[in-house]
Amino acid sequence: MMRTLLVVVSGEMRKALLMAWTYKTNTLIGLFTLGFIFIGIAFFVQGGVLDPAVLVTTLLGYLVWMYAALAVGDLSGGLGREMQAGTLEQMAMSPVPLGIVLLGRALANLVITTVQVVLMVVAMSLLFGIRLPLRWEMVPVLALTWVGILGFGYVIAGAMLVLKQVGSFTGLLNNALAFLNGSFLPVEDMPGWLASVSRTLPTTQGVVVLRKVTLSGDSLSAVWREGSLVGLLIHSACYVVVGGLVFGICERHARERGTLGQY
Amino acid sequence: MNTAFVQLRGLRKSYGTARTGIVAAVQGIDLDIHAGQLFGFLGANGAGKTTTIKMICGLIRPTAGTVSVDGVDIGRRRGAAMQRVGAVLEGTRNIHWPLSAWDNLLYFGHLKGMFGHTLRARAERLLRMLELWDRRDDLVGTFSRGMQQKVAIGCALIADPPLVMLDEPTLGLDVLAVVAVRRLIKALVEDEGKTVILTTHQLDMAEALCDRVAIINKGRIVTDQPVASLLALFREKTYRIKVEGCLTETAVASFGDVNVATVNGDTVLHGPIDQAEDLYDLVARLRVLGVRLLSVQETEPSLEDVFLQLLVAGDGEGV
Figure (cartoon, rainbow over the protein chains, first blue to last red):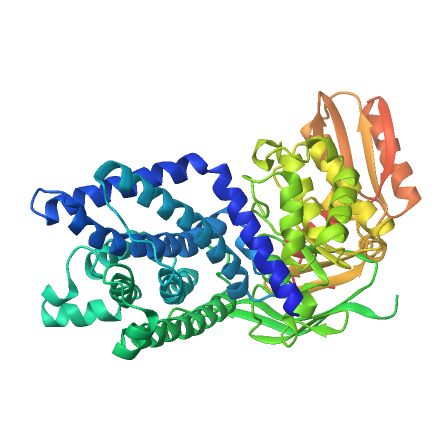
């Protein structure tokens, strides 16, 4: 059974990568758009200046947001496209549960987004002299953050199976994430209630820990002792469990209503 | 041929709630389809065909009843059952247009858990059988509708499932593509030994291909018989008599139950004539009218006639 799972996940991943390659121009244009948005927002938030020392903090949050935005867009938007194309029902006829099949798509998205993130960092470094310290501690923190993002993506994708209009809200949701996860506006400066909302979002805690290990040079054991890494671990675990449950319930509901392939 | 390969028992599906109104799409279907059969599942739009097909595919959960394929209950062991089923569903693409034919086959093979040499060899065999090997690396989006449908059938067959479901496989295809798909369906049963469930509105195709047909109306099976038995049930001696020129209204009225129509300036009389004497009598009356007899032809009822008689002329309650 495990071999079947791996084959299905790798097959879905291969397909998603092939599709991304077919639409590489769109992906590239999307990356340029993300770059312009980052510079534009940073310019306004910093009062009309682009200070590399401040930009690096913002960029780090923005990169984490990119993982979230692209994963949510790909999981829910991708499902929507599959529904419209009539291929979702074929996916749902795999012997492996649909949620597991989607994991392949999410992993492909991780690879594609990482390439985009690297290109973004290189471009920002060349254009604005932003120096992002590269430390190995970033990898496990990013990985943990991504697990939380994945769970969040499954919640939205599950909702998409039941309420087809969810697709229209993902853009709004992604923009809200960008402004509320601490990338541009520090969580500490937000009103109490908004800070509480912000802390529950899938990327906020990841951004906090990532800044500590990257910009402050903290070790993993230091952030563990201080509690922020434990917080991220619990946060991501909760998201992935909730995501799996919500997706499973929504898939069952869609099969009961016979709307799995309807858009 | 004694074991039911696909077994439906008390299958029901209702949509909606008490508040929004409940629609009973499928109302208690019991059906046994045997291995190696080409089974036609016919009915008007909204009769419950696609809902039934999707319940067999595990895409819709039944409200009540069970579906088993090769002895595997889909409700209890969906994963194992899905290894035994391939389907081309109605009105959808089924395949990925931005991928090549080759990549589509590999992808759907992976989805069924296949990989490596076994998968590649199967994909090559299917593409050769479908006469698409030379175009294997072209994006499916650039293919004609008929070729795309062939790729969809190939993808449904990639894991060599013993049961293949084809829901309106010729919808929107041109005549040549329809002929190609018909040949392919025939080959699936005769050469590959598959059990095929076919739904179609092309009743001539069902008549030509299927061993057995079930007609569904308002979620209930109206009839379920071998094609020959079904046709025999409605068989009566029907004649088509063609005479030169047009008949007068008085003459037409005198022929009673026989339908009279004008075709290309000639008159065609068509209807049931049980006794040979009645036929001779009719021909004699035409002679008296002084019209020239062009042809006399005995006709057989088609599946379309049976379908119309059951669902339109009849009460739709079945035989």
